[in-house]
Amino acid sequence: MSVDLRTRLMKDVRPLSVEAVLDGVLVEALAAHGDLAGRGASYRAVEPLGLDVEGTSFTLRAEAERLIVESGLTRAGVVAHIAEDALSDLVQDYQSTTGLAMTGRVRIEKGGLDDWVGWEPVLRALLDGRKVYETGDVDFRTEGGEPLDLDRSFSLDDDREEIAHFLRQAGFLHLRGIFEEDEMAAVGRDIDEHIARATPDDGDSWWAEDAVGQAQAVRVLNFYEKSEALQRLVDSDRYQWLGALTGDGHRHRRSAEGLVKPLGIVKGLSDLPWHKDCGQGRHSLLCNALTCGISVTGADRVSGALGVVPGSHRANVRVPGRDPVMDMAPRMLETKTGDVTVHCSDTLHRAHPPTERPRKVVYSGFRLPLLPGDEEPAEPRYGREARAELTNVQERIDAVERREG
Image 1: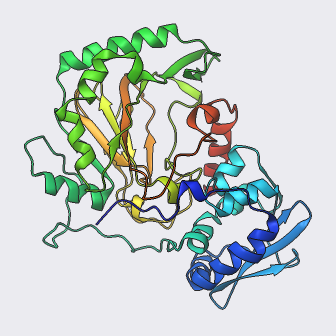
Image 2 (image 1 turned 90 degrees about the horizontal axis):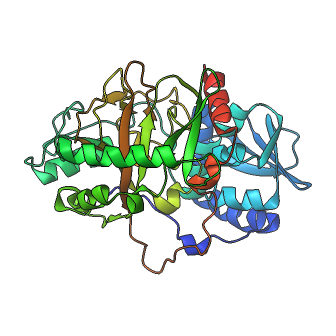
């Protein structure tokens, strides 16, 4: 089982007019996946979605478990206003419903933000043929067909194929004792140095605030280039073997981010709630990449361990937040210094806020190689640095979670 779920080429993403979407993209998608999307819309009981695109309006709704499109907004239970370029990005999975909301590119006239975001799995079923998750769709089995122990962790001495199978099934790994404590201490010193150098307007760090409004640097971008200690470790065989695990040809990004997890953060991009790395879009262009967390200090229940939802990389669900239809119990990956966690970019995960001790972690990882004939975009849009400049990202995520209850 491959974790490469891409269905699109990056070079094919282009500006589409509303006419091209209505007369081409949607006609073809409905012919190919109208039944699949209709089943998903019925299962999720979403209200008909009306879109007003600069004066051109149409509605998507389920009829007899098949999705159809009709002109106008008469039957729409949710009405969203978006520009033509936003519609183009949406139908090509360059930005998701969540991504458009977070970047202020959609205005909801009828219904709420959660209704808008709730359409995302149905749109992905329609446009990419990805079945909407139904409770019970995912189970976990060993290669021999026995129930998989989702609490298992691994070491460098364990069988690589067993490790790879676990990753494909569960969407995450906990690897013990990959690096030594003195090696982590050297990386930790580099994090401290660059956190101390950071300024709010440097474009090279992320910031958050505590309860009294004190701003703190919590993430150093471009950390691979800044830390020779880290370079030596992630360029070594102890780390690089992870790229070959799934057989999909993952390649190390040669980039990293150094994070601190302080106590008492109440605002900003520090302790993110449940989300997928592709939740803002581009799942069909990039997934699954592998994100690796190097535990510079250990992480447990009181120091902000990583949370994951097993099998969520195999589930087309709404994000952010834990979709109520998901029946997979989350896991907290409690690590020791020198351990490494791995999660697929489509695995639902979160950063638990530390309550007694802060911690440090480095995130790096591996991306899939370009598909045959594909090309890198000349000017990538909506990158992580650009999203960090949005002052209300956390508030928008929290608003969706509050509506979910």
